[in-house]
Amino acid sequence: MKNKKAAIIGAGFVGASAAYSLMLDGTADEIVLIDIDHKKACGEADDIAHGVEGTANAAIYAGAYSDCRDSDIIIITAGRGRLPGESRIDLAAENIKIIRSVTDSVEPYYSGCPILMISNPVDILTASAERLLGTPEGRVFGSGCMLDSSRFRRCIARTVFPSDKARQAGCAESIGAFVIGEHGDAQIPLWSGVSVCGKTAEEYCAEHDIVWNDDVRQAIYRETRNMGSSIIKAKGRTNYGIAVCASRIARAVLDDERFTASVSSTMGLGGDNIRASLSLPYVIGGKGLISGAPLSLSPAEKECFEKSAAGMTEMIKDLL
Image 1 (cartoon, rainbow, N blue to C red):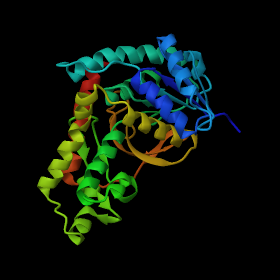
Image 2 (cartoon, rainbow, N blue to C red):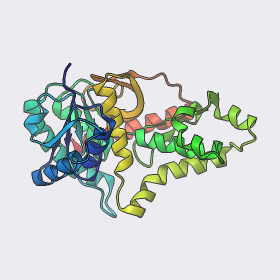
Image 3 (cartoon, rainbow, N blue to C red):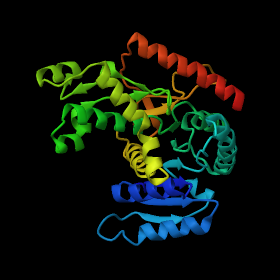
Image 4 (cartoon, one colour):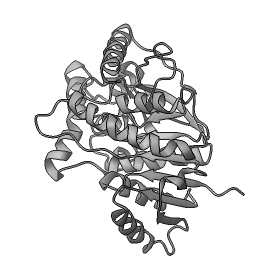
């Protein structure tokens, strides 16, 4: 049986947390951490490895870009965070330089495995990495709105299961809901597709005397959109939620699982030269994104998505 190997580029808070989550998941046989600060990567790998007995059996170590040669998935977390008062375009311009350096370093050893972009702004960097490496669409994709969708479902769960903490915690099994489009303030919650226990949200709430109107939906949307900022304000960063998303995607790739998530890709968007990368529900397997999941948008949702795609395309043209 082939060894299942994941390479993580960037050993900061997110990269190290992703390695830790992937170790606990138990899917990967081998995890390599790659960072410009090799000493830090060694420390993170050793720290994770020391707790492995009885929990997981993956080999984890600090390596070099040459270790990407036989990887089954490459996860990129390298880059810096947004500074107070800094625009997203300024962050994008600097992080594109970092991603260009990463792709230049990966390319000599790249064998065509899926590449998952975590670094922000994830939509811009996903499109940039795909173009720099010249991969087919769907091979490079970003975490996109997967974490936003998880937050969305949890916010809905607190509304529809107000006194049931267990059902709130297990909301992924009972609530169907996605956030699509841009990972950021322009994200689009798909209200038309929200389901609760196999019924539309309207049907479920009417049966259980739960208020479900525009005011409730707007409150859920605001909480979902602002949740990342709230966490950063409280602890200075977000790392665990996105790390769990990264390891879940890695499992789908390593096990060729056919898992559906709202991730960022150019698949089906734009022309051949400059393409927007935005989130839609895609089916993820061993070669990356296999196809888009069936999706029906309301006219308003479709208009918002097309507006985001046009804006993203122009932004990428200006940056690349």
